[in-house]
Image (cartoon, rainbow, N blue to C red; front, side, top):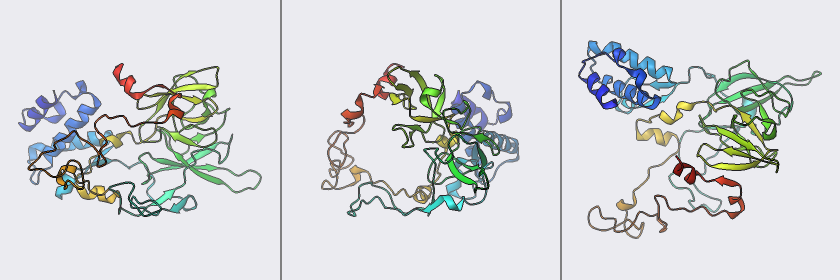
Length: 347
């Protein structure tokens, strides 16, 4: 259906506003609109395409995406996320620290993480993953901000001081539908409302969660990326609750561990397109050289005449890739009730 609609649009048989988009899924609709915008992003746009251009742009904006006028080649295929409703100024200075890059090196100076280095300078925002800044107290959302250190947005909370004490501030991960002026709370007595944090034993089964602890009091470690959420499946009498993670894995977690209600913000992060190689360099990601382009002394795929690999795909150290299992952690195996691999087989 996507190909047929694209062919109709490119041949100008119908206007984009008249295409039957309601029958498409969200991913297909977004892909079609992106294709339409690419068709319209030529240097000279005919007048007949102007209504279609505005239609595609408005639809993309409504989906939380931002398109660019292709005044340069790098902007032609670039798609970002819209930040129209986010805070326009800088971060709350008292909750920031300087962030120094490692370039992928460890304490001995050896490269342990490849393809890292450079990138824009960033300030790290101190996030209250534990939600212990003011337990059992209402925090008012002052603003929702962009954070360059993570994919989800963050929210600045203000806790009013009691008896002449100073106000306290904290950053938290911002879930969807959290707006400035909303009140959130952390504690076992909190309501089941977006942004509130409670122990798992106080959360009803079937609730969507994020920022889930693995060790009580350590702070959230699971489900912290943009647009993600986990689901509380069951609560047992042995002190454990079962949570279905975004990967499909079902894992037992102590019911004393805390989690936050709701789905994380910025769900359209998965649809961004960088548009050019330099956008990866802005993010501190360096180029990746293919093993087949190396010499045999540098990679198992290197050498040979022409495009000849001569063996199965493997890492520079000879470990197979493309599905080879490398997980080896018996201490946590007993907490995994259903692996992500088996959950996909059951679909």
